Image (tube, rainbow, N blue to C red):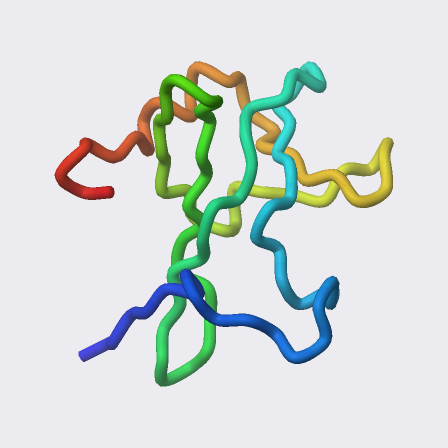
Length: 101
C-alpha cells in the first residue's frame, strides 16, 4: 500500500535547486496565469510525484487544486514556465474542498 507525503516543510540543502518546483508559476493554454505550485504529494517508497497542489488564490481568496503531474508541461515558448495545456475551466475538475486543504 502506497504511503504518500508532502514536501510542505522540506528544505533542500541547495536553495533554488532545480529539484524544488514549489512556487513555480503555472500558465494556461492562452498564457493566462493560473496560479503557482504550492506543494507536491509524492510516494515515499518510489519517490514518484503523485499530485501537484496548485494554488490559484491571492491575498483574499485561495483555491487549491490537485493536478496529476502528467497534466503539467514545461512551456515550449518561455523558459522556466510550466503550462496546464488545457482550457483553464478544466482546472476546476481538480478543485479541493476546504476540508481537504
